[in-house]
Length: 407
Image 1 (tube, rainbow, N blue to C red):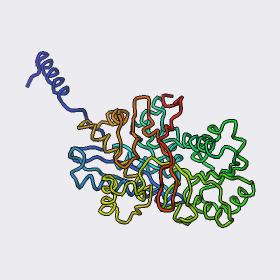
Image 2: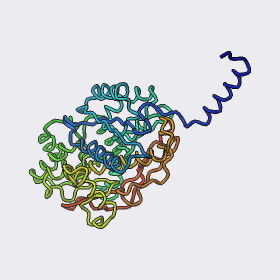
Image 3: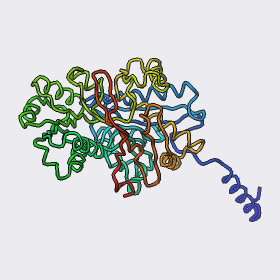
């Protein structure tokens, strides 16, 4: 068949009309029946206690698949172990993108590993959504438009503790046991900033590694005469510190960072009797709190655990953390409709308006925007009563007045 100039023009017009009528092209990692999602977790190593986050997320997506998926598409959730090693995190992320063909990375744990993969994912235009770390580095939409955090920042949490100390224990000496990494430094920095001119009340602080024995360090902190002890470290070390303080007969006001405030992984190993009175922050409901005994969302959570994650510990705050993060991703993907391009996924992630996870504490809402990549900016102070975490104050806005989010 001979193609004339006129028929060529007609064909071009028809092709253009057809192209405009077609739905947006799907990104790699998505088909009419499947959405492939990648994840990195420390299933082994010193921070393996946090692996319940990934296991709960996998269980959540299994539940969603059993119910028909998202707009008819099933989730294939591929979670890899990095043993908290950033080199391994980058290797596994590359494999997930280049070999496993994932649409996006979701909920990967830890600051070092996510920092190691951020540049690669942003260069590839791969969403790095709802990072499981409270570092401020996940809120720079101009520099890293494909990376977004989820939880409140460590630095702002430190400021919350500072405000509490100033209000309730203004004349007390303070000791800090902090983890020698970016997590520990950020929270300690927020504590010092919040204390301001009263930061000289910190009479002792010791930096530690994630896998070291800390009895001697707790002995030194006790000898400082401190009446307030801030534990800014991973759950296993926090547990040992609480137990050691009790063995020494030292009973300071104990402030425990949210990242370590797991009854299953910190308070129970410390001895629940030793942990009575410990203060922390929270943004999710605690199933042990009788306030939520008849709460429909908690009943749904318990049924979920029984059916989809029966080996999980219901007292493990990391399990409900993973569940709530997965709920948030479900909301984003549902908002996407049939446009599952990576660009639209980031657009929808930055378009969450007063979204509330059913397992979030009342008043804790997620709001994002093109220049606001901080989904959760609110927390509540809570205190452990020997069985559950009880709220002891109103919802606190943890965001800074001057946000670096649009940098």
